Image 1 (cartoon, rainbow, N blue to C red):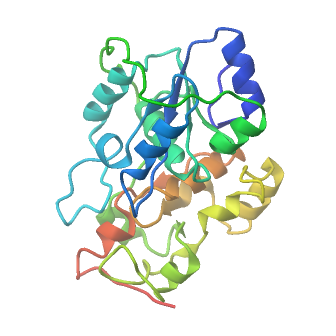
Image 2: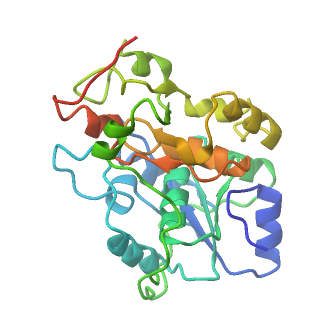
Amino acid sequence: MIFSTLIDAARLRERQAAGVPLLLLDCSFDLADPAAGERAHAAGRLPGAIYVHLDRDLSSAKTGRNGRHPLPTRETFAATAGAWGIAPGVQVVAYDGQGGVYASRAWWMLHWLGHRATAVLDGGIAAWQADGGAIESGAPAPRATAGAPYPSLPQGMATVDAATLQARLGRVLLLDARPAERFRGDVEPLDPVAGHIPGATNRFFKDNLGPDGRFKPVDVLRRSFDAYGGSPQETVQQCGSGVTACHNLLAMTHAGLSGSLLYPGSWSEWCADPARPVARG
């Protein structure tokens, strides 16, 4: 059995006890302090977890026109995944301390490579500790020799670029995962232009979570996303830079609504071109 969306702490511990090949990715991050995740990793992590940095490992170089967290090529990310030791048959579990938002980016990218055996730890490190899971600290032990690049497989997740999205506005359900005040354009702490893509609907990613920081039940998530109308295949996920949008995509997939597309550049790429339309309110 593989886990391809979420895994809870108890099941992860069972898999560890059974000796199932596992790779744990600590994706903790803070947009306001890019070194915070590494400090948190050193202070306390799941035993054996590898630290994954949003900027260095899950993004490529910025040009000023391609968004704040542009995707690397699949070939580049395949080499990164291989260096972590990911190969077909290895169950990957990504986690963070921020509600799964950065872990969801790693989840999406590994599915994008075709590695279906990738799940997010529901509730993150807090849920792990609440279930009695051990924590280790200090400098991580040296990793084993890196493996070969992840093999070339059919792309497991679909994307849409800015030009294609602009041509399809009004004919797709476009979900924006940012907080409501950023969506409306009341504030914009990260990008040079405030507002949203015309026709987008706000779906704050934290609405996927319950008060305990875990994802809401499948039936609750499904009803919530069904209420927006439109099929998953005609749904495009976006946010500020293609990160929190993956949280909505994970929630939909977990609820049995797989097939939506990611606009990786999201608002930070969209607003970099003054010729593209902007909506507010």
